[in-house]
Image 1: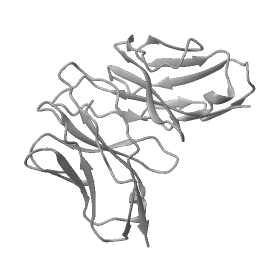
Image 2 (image 1 turned 180 degrees about the horizontal axis):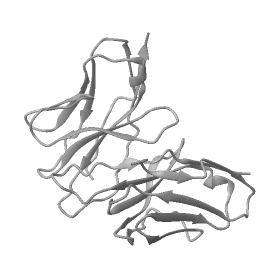
Image 3 (image 1 turned 135 degrees about the vertical axis):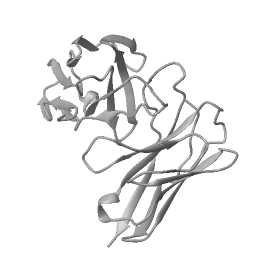
Image 4 (image 1 turned 90 degrees about the vertical axis):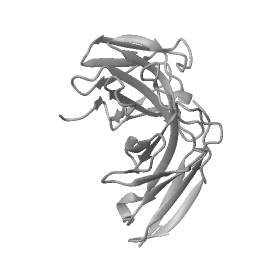
Length: 112
Length: 116
């Protein structure tokens, strides 16, 4: 899987929007951009994914740059429960499923 | 569905002992993954199965580690003999065949292994 770069940590206030960036300058045309998060003492959980267009779901929004070399996960109104490590992962699933390659992710701290 | 089930949740053992971790994937999922998480190395894929067949075990650290999936609803990860450096949280995950390139993986709660 192609490499991604994320800030080690970010801090935000409760009830404010949070923008988590991810750089993936070597992304290929068949790579999907996936985001997972890991809450304290839990296994990772899927957040959102996209290919070229921006995506929205009940948890978050994903904004993908036009050249696809970067993306931003947007939490519209952060709560204390959103404090977690957020992982940006590229996946090419043409050959079927494979394991996830986790980087160090971004540790999101939410201040009350 | 109860989600991915792992047992035990915590395991403390002494160096040299055999350890067996267990996983029950979500019913109907075709893929099963074993990951390990440590402070030093983060989350790493150890091995994964498709339809009970091991597909990629390149992440298995050494011959002391072995994994099996005798049927679609059960998998084990065994360490024999265990060493202190095996102390970690071990996660099991499962997913469906990729469709629409989502292929979300569902993770279990993990087994925290401590080898003394």
